[in-house]
Length: 428
Image 1 (cartoon, rainbow, N blue to C red):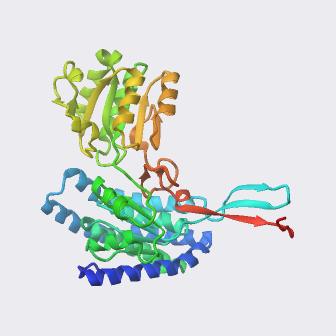
Image 2: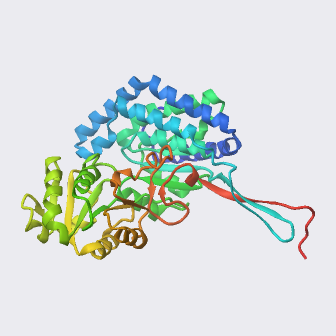
Image 3: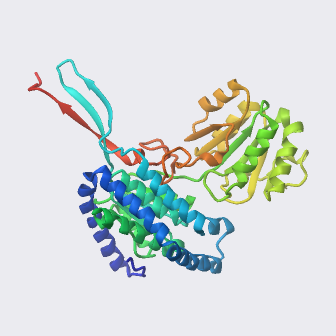
């Protein structure tokens, strides 16, 4: 069982170096582990999470009490808190990952050369993955399971606010590894709250970390991107937009707007800005905003919106670049699809954007001209989730363009190699 404790800086450096060495030692046996062994481990992990539900809830209660005493925001507390339904969802997510096709060894492409060489591009594990995340304890389960399925050892560094919960979940993951005869060091949880541990991971732990995945707020991702000496899959803030086109069905627009903002305000796929075509403001704007207010949402509106809807605060420049992660939305009237595209391309974090429209031409422009990781038509932005994409779960939504973009699932946690088969060819 993991023991959480504070360490001196020298102790932290030594501990992290040892974690890195042990992760690297686990890389080869994990890379060649059979699909059956990995799936057996995953099923055993899910079973252990259900069996230890009370242990996890008791650990989480400590974190929640500490968070309340520290005055954490409501949205942060929502991400931190576990309940029986969320624990079952964690276990179900792991089982879904077990049911996914094993990507390791998949032949992505194959072709023959005129000289008779047969060339294949084949999926391989990335190597040792470092995941640095904040309040969500469920990331411990998601990241551990996804990396295992893709054949990657993982080093998990959760936030100090959720370490008790993460430790209880991690113990279940270790049970699963042991049950399947896989190395315990395939999934390690950093056992200290010392921030120096993050710095050591960003340095690469002596060459033992192959990629870093940050999942958290802007300050965490900014630190990782500025300090990391290994490749980073960036999960930036979700300044997500919902655009209501002039061709939108009003009932659909109301339903999607309320869900996109209010289903869970603390997730990265929650809509933060609502854009409405100026030409349908007289018919669409007030019903949508009335529904949002009735659901408990605070409206920050531009001057044109305030002329039609009075129960709102004036929007400031900061509203267009703020990830609220709360029951607040910024609202603006725009001049059709062109105005929506211009606003989104100016202020978006390139995470997720949605359009509600019946005009196929407007939808095609939206899809073709906006450069964000996820684009949706007539659907809530809250579908920006690996589980909803059929990927079992995700480590995060990558907003960069190198290697992985969008939900980072098992396939995105692989690289590839080339296999070339010949029959005695030599190069002239």
